Length: 152
Image 1 (cartoon, rainbow, N blue to C red):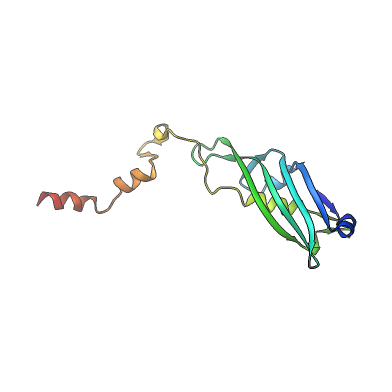
Image 2: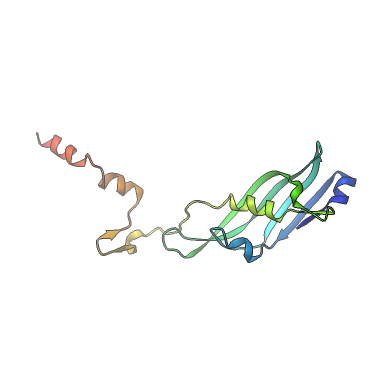
C-alpha cells in the first residue's frame, strides 16, 4: 500500500479507504497464523513538515488457542496515529505504509487467547489443567495451618 507523495503535498491530505491482504511473509515472525483482509480507514496529512497517518484498522486474525493449540478467530479493531519516517520513501514519489499498518495489527495480538471451557479433557498421568481459582484454593501453602488452627 503506497501513498502518492505528489498528491499529498498538493492537496495536504491523502485518504486511504481500502482492504489490504498481507502476504505470508508478514506472518512468519508473529503469533498470527492467518489473517483475513484488513479494512483500513485512514488519512495521511502534513503536520509541521511531518507526514502523519491516522485512522483505524479492523479485521479478523487467526491465532493458536493457548490450551488446545487449535486455530481460533480473533476479531480486532484499533485506532492509530503514526508519524511516517523518511526511510519509508520509495523513489521519493510514494510512501509505503504496509509496515506501519502491520506494526499496529501486531500490537493487537493478545498474550493468551482460549476458547476452551471444559478443562476436564486436558489431563494426563499425574497432572491436570485447573483454573486460576482452583490453583489459589488448592495450592495455598497456609492451608495446612488453617486446618491445624481449627483443631486446637
